[in-house]
Image 1 (cartoon, helix red, strand yellow):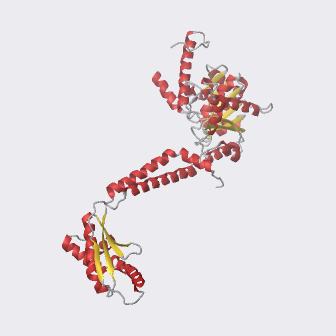
Image 2 (cartoon, helix red, strand yellow):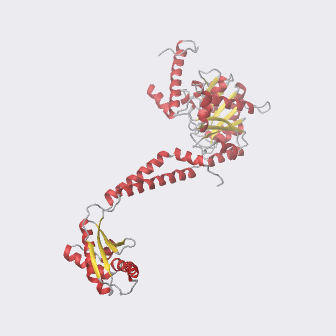
Image 3 (cartoon, one colour):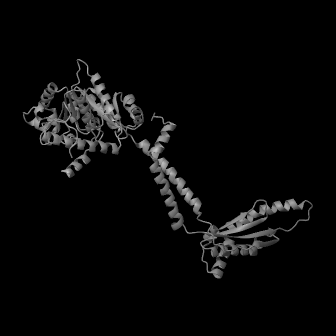
Length: 232
Length: 263
């Protein structure tokens, strides 16, 4: 049991800093992002479904979506975090949940997302894991059923966050961005390639995604500033 | 590229890649050491000093003229010794017969050098060889041959004296260890710096959140500082602890959240 745990945390070192260390500068940044998203949400353009993607792999999509979900839940909102990366799912590893059933199950059966979602220790915070790997993730996400599920989730939760695969690599994030109210693009310093980022922006513009903004990850220069305020 | 680079950025690049620069520096040093100590054969050098006297003229202000003429003649001697085949072939024969030293004319000419000190009528034949004895033999033989034959070539030479004969010196003149190592070190350093900048130029990843806002025109919603591996491990460890105790709480009591007291 312990062995297994160690293995999973190694393969996905996603840190739930906002949950574990809420006073840290990192957690503070996630709260800032939450505020900025709430401000982007106006009366006629409510941001209730949020897609988190990036241009390439390992830029912090899962980290961002997990931590954002936690800070939204901490603000008293009813949050559903959906692992829509059915190719390389990680959310269930981060929260150590079972992935025997999840989004792919909801898409292929008549179960409602609320029924399938797993409760977490954080109040108001539910997670819908990816479920078993389907052979055709893009088709599933593009289906009318998916649109229907999103509508359902929108009614049941205050905010639904979708963790997506990289937008340049596969089309999944493009499909979901076109359906969602807002898209967040994760950029990681010294990692994200400029050309890939340009391509990601173009791809999202093609499907008329509403890109709310960029989460700038792994910043080195702002660290000092942050610690200036929070060091004890 | 329109991107400009500031002095501060240059320092940042150097600071960021200092490990690479240091590695390259020591690689240069190691390479120089290998070449100096294992590949290059040591060279020994030896010098024979000579003086050539020209016949005195009868004139009144002869002194200055003669001295000047002598000095100019040194260039001629230099050519005879360094370039001429006649001297070299005699030297070759004598080296072979007297010292059993087989060398080609080309090698003999390459190994010899004529040095003159400024404003002095004395000049030296400096020979380098792979052993101290070789160097000594070449220098002495060349000096003797020059003494014997130069009067056949140049008629206006009065007297040739070998001021000091060459002696074998056991200290190699080449390779110069300190110099070679210093060159290796500095070249390594320069290559390291060049590589650091090259990598910086070739690295097309996002370096600054300003790229996102200024070039792409996107809003930065949040700037999440980088977490060290240590911080990440600390938080994941903490998470594991909380989850485990929560699980136990859920199992034993009716799902209420309690403090983490159980082991």
